[in-house]
Image 1 (cartoon, rainbow, N blue to C red):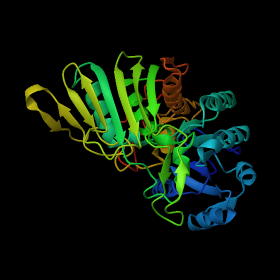
Image 2 (cartoon, rainbow, N blue to C red; image 1 turned 90 degrees about the vertical axis):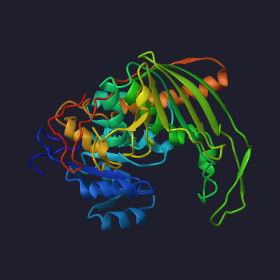
Image 3 (cartoon, rainbow, N blue to C red; image 1 turned 180 degrees about the vertical axis):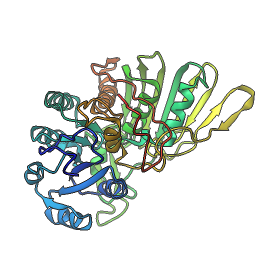
Length: 387
């Protein structure tokens, strides 16, 4: 593939068939990306970096890549894009370093740890003319995209409102080191909110204003498994967040994200319209059933109609390639950094609103991503150009 690539990392020549990746961070989530990379010809892993060099070596050896420290990875001419799987607090620093090295970036969620650093990273990428993308890419699968197709076909009339609900007990029962989930930067909103909010923006468009309320049922949690079982950890961030999102389209979404409840029987996401309603599957998955309600017909499951079949984490990177983001127009593609930054500001705004007791206007926006046609998992409709 060297004939299709430029000599400088970060720039893929028009017509390139795959992107050469340098993965930074080889923790738990990396396994899902590595599985996708191994089965998609569009993606090639060439280097791995991690603070634990032994872990980087083990992953690199297994996947036929080179183990590097961060500087070594960024200095490689055969790395086109840095897959940033570091902890959220490191996202901005690693992404900025990659951009300075002339590399594209795809960051795990959240885009960065805060909106200010996210705006700076996005500015740097735009000035450098490199591709920048952001997880989650679950919205590219058949679940959310089938719901999107139904909306775009007018099957529920004009979308008026939505509900997004996630209620679970929290992670301390099973996670051996759950401290992060109960500290600033964690909590149910920043942990799981990106999946729900990215879905709402994909379906209903960007948000112009948010109103939030938040609290914590308990001021400490007890670790339930592993070597620290029985240890009490403090809760210093809201463990229950609810709020309203006012979309620029006029639709209003209600969000509930909680680590304080036992369970919920509500659909993960429901969209209500003037002529019907949609039940959307778990936005942390790429597939799932979509149900349509229209008057006397009751709830009916819809056939799969759109999205990448058998998609998994990493399809957002492949979509950037397939959409033409590396063909000289880095703004193409659906999993754009602009979308990740907007979702981050929605979350930050909900928490700020809860503290201040007033509505918060958004300063960022994004285009509603283009729909994904129903496509083969390994060979999508490459002619579809998304912006």
